[in-house]
Image (cartoon, rainbow, N blue to C red; front, side):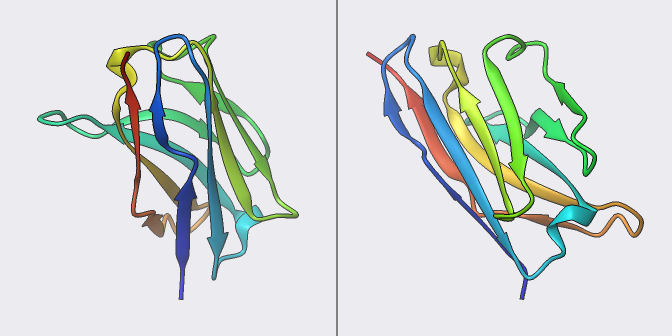
Length: 117
């Protein structure tokens, strides 16, 4: 059974930092491209950051220079370090895994991030 379990969300003041984690099980983690998406109320889900199995990264323009995605294949975990958080970063953040060849994909259950004073 495949599971992607996010953690690390919460309430933070503007300018603060959070680190999200996504622990994967039931998959061969090194064979998956991983990503973080977010969805704010009334908005579509959008890609925030992605990291390939080989470690290449890409970011949404809105988070470049503030967020960093990384992965630890030994721990089957992907991280999202979020700095200089803004109120517009408030959303539910979802972990996503996509297999390199089959494109089979999985989603986590999401973790709430709220940026507010």
